[in-house]
Amino acid sequence: MSGKKLAIIATKGSLDWAYPPLILGSTAAALGYEVEIFCTFYGLQLLRKKMDLKVTSLGNPGMPMPVPMPVLLQALPGMQSMMTMMMKQKMKSKGVASLEELRELCIEAEVKLVACQMTVDLFDFDTSDFIDGIEYGGAATFFEFAGESDITLFV
Image (spheres, rainbow, N blue to C red):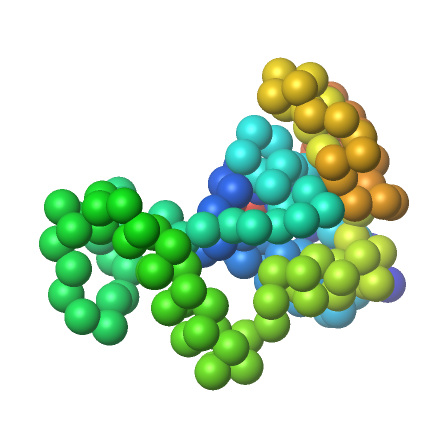
């Protein structure tokens, strides 16, 4: 191991925002970094047993769409599900790993996955909602690791 450390704060719980922390974490671990991903607020979705995440097209004007889609249309019922399906199909056709596969890569590479205890309590989650093998901690837990990290990312 190189002795380098990467700390990531994952705060988003949508399909498009779940990829960066898992891709960066698994890649850094493969490169020899010691990695911790601290999941807080909506980022807790990355640690749930069932990840049923949707695309967030609203408020994301940079999202490339197969056909131009005005914001008003994106707000219609069923559009988020359709866009999520289109995104998943596109990723599959390009050989992009699923979120579950990326999370498993992180676990196999010994990436430390930490659920923010305050957020777990805030949203009345139960530890049975989450995958096995994760840790629970607060901001102090994150700072203990991040304070010694070479790189810290907020995603």
